[in-house]
Length: 416
Image (cartoon, rainbow, N blue to C red; front, side, top):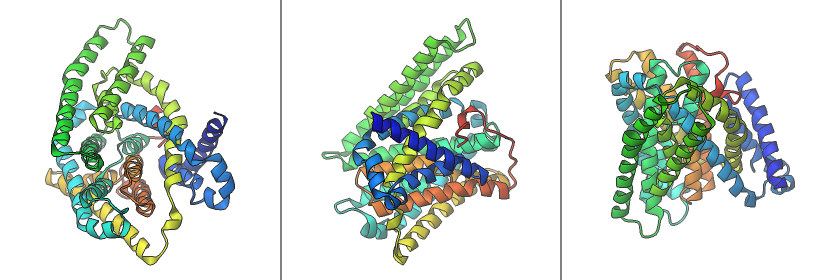
């Protein structure tokens, strides 16, 4: 227990300092936190002080990090889902659906094109072509919904048509990505079959229908019957129970628990005082204590020293080029087809190109499943970091108005 507490103190200190530096440089705080995690890993701390690194962060301690960080991610995704504006989503649904489809299909197609060559170079022995291609395609096409929401929050754009459209596109992206991820993971399990995959899909449909058409109306009625507009202790506990149960349900189905947490957020009654109370009670704990553990865990799996040689750097640059062109290009084409301006279309593409947190989650899942080698894992972490760093400069270049000063509770003090 003493070691875990010391580890948490060190992680919070380093990620806080790196996040502050990132903000001073005009970047989202999450960029600094990811870099802080890499600094704590074998690429920097492990190389400069290998004995101290192995003593402070032994491999046996990663399990505790993973559990705590997953709880933080579940609560964070719930907060994001609870903030979606239904009215803006309804108005921008055509652009959102087409934008999400194109921003998935184009980078996924590019990933399929390069997958055979990358399979021979970077796949562990025994990994099948189809699972490897699915994981690579997901990694290239996913959008980091939490990081995107935080950037929009930081700039005061979360309630604008552009912000709502981007959030909707990212939400659809993530639903598709988690579904494909479930398929890919099922293929790696012994005895998996088409019947098993269909069975999981049917249970997923039943779950989503139950949440949207039973739980959501029930929550709305309970909110209307409350005698006080304040969120009571009992209601707060009931909401947490719903979130955890929803996450557990999707985990049992075979879809990542983050999807269940996000759906639970969508079903939360839109009572302003409840939303504010949930933010104020949960966000500081999640942002300051739990999420930095995830960044530290990712950093400990990142080996920048493996990116050596012209061949590896060539593939890293190619992956980055395909990821950026596919994601931005798909979103821009879709937005233009639905009548959006060039400024709005390019801004949507820049936002959809944000990968950050969710990309790291997918990469960690692929790494643990033995689909990606440490070298490919590191290449894709670099891609996730650079594509996320591009977002703020691109929005500034496009002269997208920054309506925020300091972010509200969701991004403060973390300020993603």
